[in-house]
Image (cartoon, rainbow, N blue to C red; front, side, top):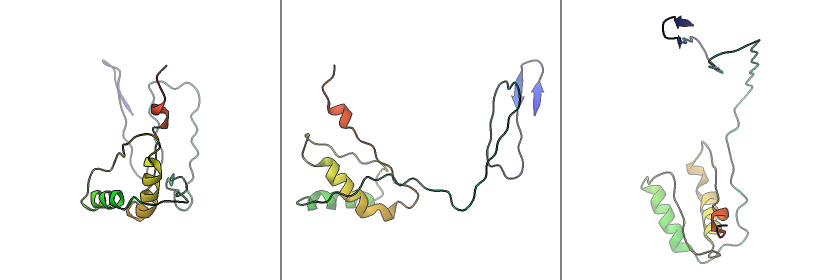
Length: 118
């Protein structure tokens, strides 16, 4: 580490295999880092269970499949009135195509946004 005395600028240089890095303006006392990686790192698999029942949404599934196959953006939004099955459609399709996403699967919900503002 080098410090430029006139401006207080700090530059860091690290070589070799790096497993963890901490950069801080000032540290008082000891810094201890114990980082051991054994085996494979667990990838996020955050899909809720697939819906038990799913019917009459073939056209929507075809549309979602087409978006996936043509390389559309990695985020697809499903919109509609409350109670029409948006979440069921999204979960059914996500389970169906999860093999296309070997790195991770994560979900989010907008259920809270459906509540009336206070």
